[in-house]
Image 1 (tube, rainbow, N blue to C red):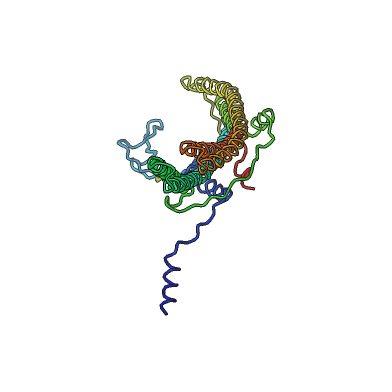
Image 2 (tube, rainbow, N blue to C red):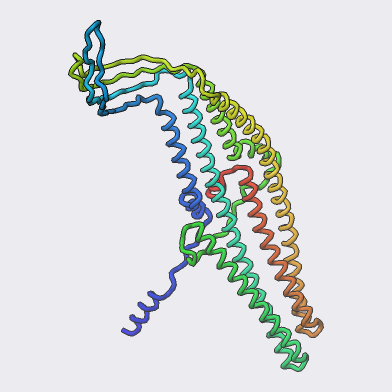
Length: 428
């Protein structure tokens, strides 16, 4: 009975297994539910409503009205020597009127096109925000993987210093060395353990950053799977430039904004042209002097803007200047995109070369430590030789892991600068 209770208590209080988070799973969450993405989608909804607003002139405008009128003098008409009232001095009027725009020389259609391209710009910005969220998550994910490896290096360094301390104690007990070498080993081991704590804290912080991006409690445990994809492998700079010019969301956004402003310019030019409309309705006026107090009406009319204080001309100048400015910004943006791609590409190539160098350094440092420990155990090498060899190996391993994840971060940054869909590139 006691064994059963003990088993139940052990199962209840034992920690739950930590789910290994894959990069694909995390990307799907941040792209669909991230805070910045949600904000961008809200702005996109506002732009979609602006399209509906631009379409409203093509639909009839219906007004229901009513009013009560009090006159100081009763309206009266003169017929020769006679005067006759034409209306009451107090009367009620109500009615309904519908007005339909018939033709405005493309003003409304241009405004609708401008709103649609404005919506397209917002949709592109949402895509860009999603891709930026994906990039931030990939970098944070790689940082967590790097901190895992650096923590492992720090723990292995502690084990190596513990092994040296064990060797030093054995030689001290044999009377070969003085107490000073043992104390030196103890101090070095204590410093190594402090560095392991620092590495553990760094890992915990980066874990919390991942949780923040995933909208999860900051202290939830995370185990990250290794990233093995290399989507930019074999890519040349010319290929990267060509892809960026075709896929860059910044360039697509600028093109949509230019087209939107050009459509707005056409709508402003149409203000010089007449507007044709049709209006009709029903009205009742309380007036006992009228034969028909209620009446139906139909009006076909035209409005022409002859003079508006120069506002139309000023709006045209503003719109033309904005179009020219956007086109110049587009040329500047193209250079900026190409420069960003080249900078990221060079960082990617540099990181790849550094990784090759560090791999060789780790192998050499491992062999050096093995030889120094053997020489120390045989009394040929000093304690300083062993401690230096451990430090050298730790540095080489740390540099190797940093170089690996610098390479992966540089690759993600390169793909982002090219405008590639990171969720698609890493989520396969």
